[in-house]
Length: 219
Image (cartoon, rainbow, N blue to C red):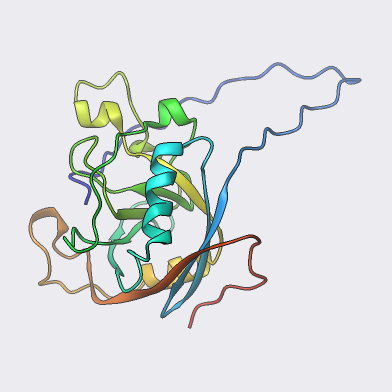
């Protein structure tokens, strides 16, 4: 679980020189990914896991998938931010440190190394200190780039940021539907109080797939 949700100014956009009229724009670079379906009681979410750009974090997530460690876990936390157009925040799920499910923590892969970012639909590992991530993850709702690594920060946690390792390619409506479910005002402690769902949504199954399913829908 995240210790704090950093609220940082967005990075400045870099101006690019105009292409000559007779020069075709370069094709976007493609990186290897692995598709995974997250089957929940509210519908399916398909995600692309960044096996090339975030190999350590991706391999950890896929091990949980392949060993069925996520099956029977829940989406349990919905953070709502009170600025911008709703929905805005993140949805969190996973093993909740269940000793029967968690694997050893993995090395931290900062966004400064992977080139990934906490954009709308990005998957990011939940953690305490950098290098403590195990089997909990979050899905961004709207851009949350304040969670990216910030090398110039004096705070070691903000310097490292959080590790992005994938993005939603289908079923974002399901993410929004779960995020909109009511919280229990009495569940949780400290900054987590009021963010835990009254009825967590079960993750029935996670599995690798070779193509994006034609349809993902919420109840």
